[in-house]
Image (tube, rainbow, N blue to C red; front, side, top):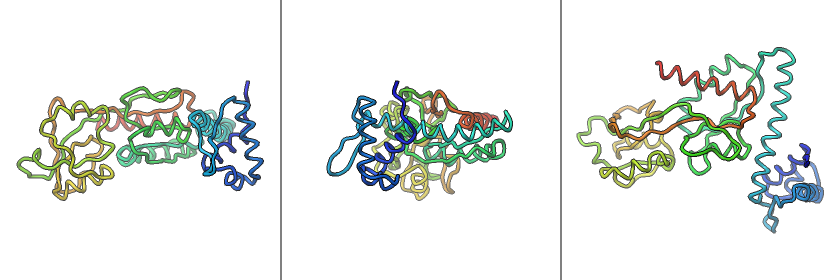
Length: 292
């Protein structure tokens, strides 16, 4: 059995985050040779190379990335353990500790604020932090896999990364947004952004003869809305992105074959009480939204 101490995990993370043994030593108050020996000893114990070394510094190998993810989760779990233990010692119903949340922009803007407000009232000792991550590539779920987040709000369309669990929260429909009063909005140029065309819309998108190739590409959905409001085109956007429309815009239903996407959460199977508290508030916020 291979047991790694928190000190060894912190050394691995310092090397990965600073890009080298000397910089990691400076951060930790150790010599470069002490960091190098510690990493080499960990690699021997695990039987795998964790870093590629060259003159430019040190970069994590694929195996190293997996180990770093476990290291981040393990160290964060130790922090949460202490907070949870203190809470449990005082009352069995007390929930406390940090929760790192990764969310893409429209969820962070539209869904999270009321959830965090309710969380503060019901669980004042839960300490949420939110990082906005683009919903492309590994996306928000990749932050949990890498150990940088405890909970991800993500679009669900495929299996989560190995070792994680995913559960749905809500289904979003897509609609056409365009300048209000335009007689033929489908003839306008298309405005789009990188996050918009996932696996859940790509098939539908390919079948729409009226949809041109995007001539304007924006950074995010908020910028898309601003450009469309200026009369620069139309856009096909999910429901949450259309929750707060700028003046001068209208939304048109795309019909019964309109695309949808599933929004859910991704976390680890052993998520602690603080993470479970956030999930409960997410579910309650969705129920309130549906009944409104």
